[in-house]
Image (cartoon, rainbow, N blue to C red; front, side):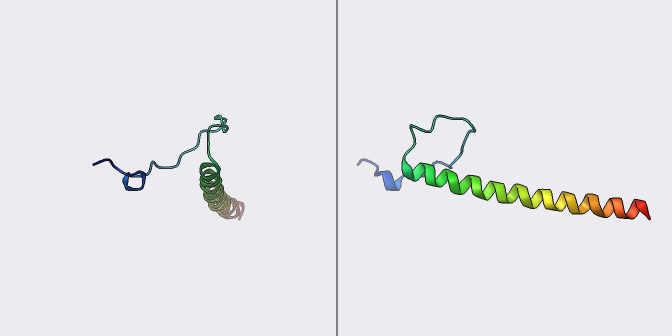
Amino acid sequence: MPIEDDDRPRKKVTHEIGQDLSLLSLEELTERIALLTAEIERLKEAAGKKRASKDAANTFFKS
């Protein structure tokens, strides 16, 4: 009995910066946009935490 496409586990969406996009479907491009948007938000959050930590340390050592 052949396995249907819907029954197969989906590969985790990954993206390599600079890769050839011409081979990707519209759905794959949309998934990658969502993935990268979430990653940008995660990076912004991490940067905000580091900035707050640095500012707190600067304030502590200036007083």
